[in-house]
Figure 1 (spheres, rainbow, N blue to C red):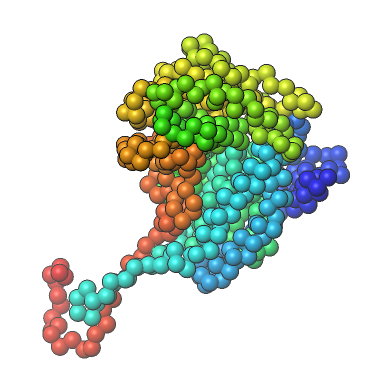
Figure 2 (figure 1 turned 30 degrees about the vertical axis):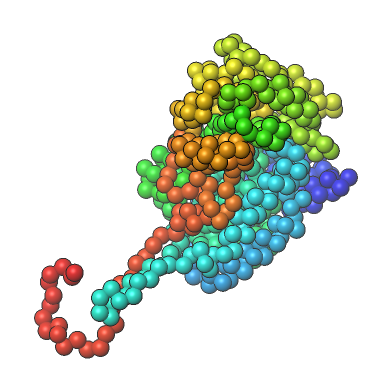
Length: 519
Ligand code: NAD
């Protein structure tokens, strides 16, 4: 009852999930401060992944609507970038409080559209909220540099200035956190923003837009369009857009990076992953197995930092039966049900893909120690559920190892030594995250230095950095040279202007023009 109340409150703000109407509610666009109905004839269904019921429809915005959204960004940029930084900071201080006040409403809409458990959905909002809190330190983060007296009476100083119109393209798996990596950081720097949420989970972004408006963001500073390829191409090609932030699959991310860069834009592109957890025989066993199971199967494995691959070293190979026992105990259920550990996958197609990757593992010689394909979730028989699955004896040539599965499937490899494990990790093309479990400091240090991965956990299974740092995935998991949030995020959304000035009394020594390069 409480959850339904939250959904109703949220729905009244985002324009869909209207339980009192027979018609399927439609998501609006957000253009120049107005939540407007799209005139498109092309709509995409939004499904509840636990039931496959259609809970909303999202428009493929028309060309005219997308143009209007960019125009609003362009027209608002001069006044927004000139708004005092203290006023921008105040808006985001109010915003972080409004997100806290509406955390449960945001979580309930995430669970409805994305499927993850309510507790996990709250974590999704919370990790995004931390970025907004960090953005509130903008008065320190945006400081420039100065160097006085470079020569007599001459000083040099830099300003960090906003770029103009920036745009974000988000994936389905973190409906609140990832949009919150994007527009708050850009806007607090003085940019205006065009956001395209995932067409599968637009609700959280719409509620976040309402809250930003309530916090006092002027009309036109944030604009939201919806759609798929046409909207993405529009963003990559529009001459007014200076920078693109993308998070999602490699297929889309490589494409957007190339197309956007070719058009002269800054692009940061966070993409897929295959994160390895290296388990040393000296690790604290109980703790390690619990961490591994949580990080492999939490959010049904639909996290870019999920620990989807275990490398058991030496005697740790004997821990497999206990690993399986722990995974078996997880409760698969709809995300809004009490006690649920593992929710559904996002779509029927995703379920089919995950099941066929499990099958490929079996065919290619892996040992299927736990098979979640036939899981039965009472009352939710039509949902996209796959239970925790463990494939052991996996080798690097198998399809289930090479592909990002993005489901509740842990693939397990063995290694005899730490060096062998490091070699496995470094030969894998992805570099998003990895973790080592050990009680030996020298082993941990060696791993953190030699593993060629951008984010490393030592006895920490999902080492996503807090926003005072940056999200530093590497190799095939990232394209670009400036990462999301933290100092790197500020650098991405700003450009430097350097001023060299000389103020001196009348100079009697300069009697003729100086034509030689000043030194
Ligand atoms: P996706 O690439 O399918 O979709 C992401 C966005 O790109 C969506 O807004 C979508 O409309 C658009 N899109 C999809 N296909 C496109 C195409 N062919 N051309 C142009 N645009 C396209 O990703 P997803 O399924 O929503 O998200 C899951 C993926 O995101 C996984 O690979 C996961 O690892 C990755 N991810 C990475 C990070 C990270 O920080 N590295 C974080 C979260 C998710």
